[in-house]
Image (cartoon, rainbow, N blue to C red):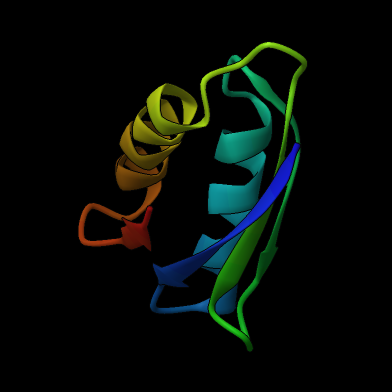
Length: 72
């Protein structure tokens, strides 16, 4: 399942680091952050609960940029 989320991120480098963090999160098959559009596309692994996975993604992204936001 693929979903798109609005994000708030301050710089392109942070967006790249957030993408890497999201891709390492359990339940994420792939993630792509578009800094210019302020969007994150996430493809979830089969059987993953998107809400739970996105909470983990947000935690991982906040390690990169503490004030980032993901609307889910």
